[in-house]
Image 1 (cartoon, helix red, strand yellow):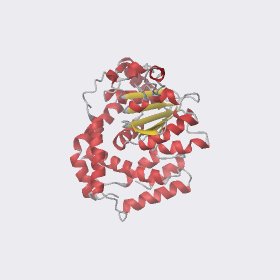
Image 2: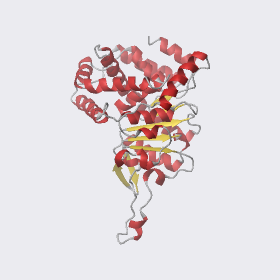
Image 3: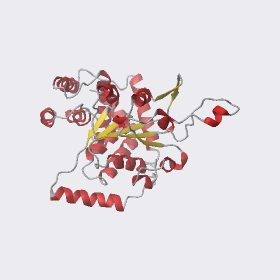
Image 4: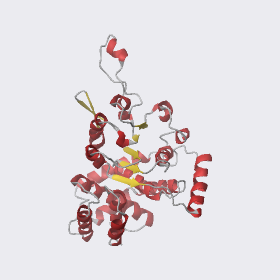
Length: 347
């Protein structure tokens, strides 16, 4: 699908970054029982910069996983793992690295983007200006809990924020430093008006409770007990600068593409497998696979291939099994039987 020379050049240049990503995945997988797929999805979101949403019933550790990820990177303190933190405590040394908010249908844009500074409005300056300290448009990593509860006013503001990394304010566009956006919800969108917003979440990972067997419950309780009462203390040093390294990786993907050193080869048999899978997903109404999502999933496949090749020490080449990330993280609705049949054709 991608030219092999370009893939391997990218892997060699960013071997350290890709190795760190795999280590991060292993670190989190060791802490969270039966959440390997969710963590894999987070790694793809991190490497590509694409928005990701965790979908599952209450009590499946969605918020805990996202906070733990940010804690390992040194973006939030350890006390943020236990409760929904006060905004002042959620920001690391007031660097405004992380923003988290629980959305409801009554949430107003000012709660995310900042209220207007009344002192400046009624002072000598007479300026109509937001106080943006600690607000979403200042954060590198954003987590919106119960994201599909948002009002239409919030949705309109978030569409541009997610897609273009820009914030609309009184007719002006402001670039934002956001690197990653995570969402969480107990359910998929229930209203037709949310479909455009849902489409922006390229990566969607579904979670559920563990099976009610003695073995599964025992493993879960032992793992979760240690995570809750003996939470690993992370100071961010093991993965210091990882997000900056990822920025360099993404910049090289762009630069190599512009120089034609990294390109898509439509004659590659794996590209035919990709188009066939897309057609089947549409035919079975498992996913609309919009034009935007097809293009962006090409980038996710690139990330999956490079992470796998770095982990195994093999040559970088997209394999049929890599297309499984579309079945894992790209569906509009779940049909286990249909997905199993499609996955069998990828093996």
